[in-house]
Figure 1 (cartoon, rainbow, N blue to C red):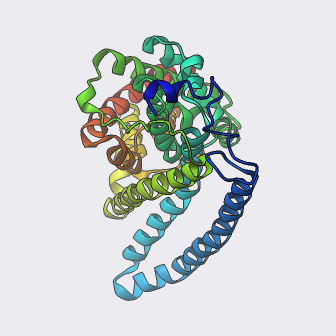
Figure 2 (figure 1 turned 30 degrees about the vertical axis):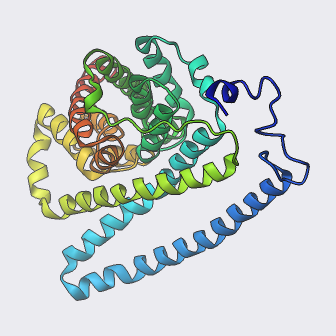
Length: 360
């Protein structure tokens, strides 16, 4: 079949694609039996896979610290505790992101994105940044979703703006922030404004200065004339979750190492200076790898630091941390991750200080 015949097959009622089966699920279409079979498989694998993951988590949470103490010292047990906490905290949201990513690739036509977003990348950036408010998830979920958007033809600048805004301004994060800072409700507005401003600025910076050789674009899959989208969904989910999960583990290990290696007395030196406290929390946000849906409670507990410093912690954390850098490097390439993370950290710091001075 030629490319022209393929592109116009559905419009001319060609006997291929959805609905072209013989009523028994045979042929090129998707029969009811195929959907039922795929749904049963997803339930089966999800149930027993969930039981296996739960069993492994329970065993490691109980035996891990005990083994660590026997093998070495209490600091090793503390390292294991931090490492496990970061991984367990990030995996559910990483799974959410890969589910959304696979669903976008399998079920959402490419024309949906081209119609919703302006053709001009500079105009698409603020629209994509504001769209980040609709996806409940953390930074672990944003990377596979942004990758899927690029595969569907969305401009990289717009996808990157979404990547930065989604984990910082979604409803779950804002509600958590309002609960953590009940005595300072303006902190919710400050976080929303600073995070959205930083994501839009980063998108515009990519439009102006970004180069194609810096970004390893995900391969865009060509449409197929036959096959089940449920199979495509399962294959995409498996690939994205296993791929991103490995880098999540690497980032968690780096975060745990810092928590154990740096003495607490070193951190206390910086609390006396307003500017040094902002810089310190900006660095700690990168290293501690706290999930964006929990970082507000961590920031609220840092009462020795100024409100602007704590705002900086909440703005930079969802944009740049060790596990996010690892995920970006594995998805988009090391050259991209180094440049984009450095620029995001700088922009996030500046917007936090500016909004903090204005609102706080």
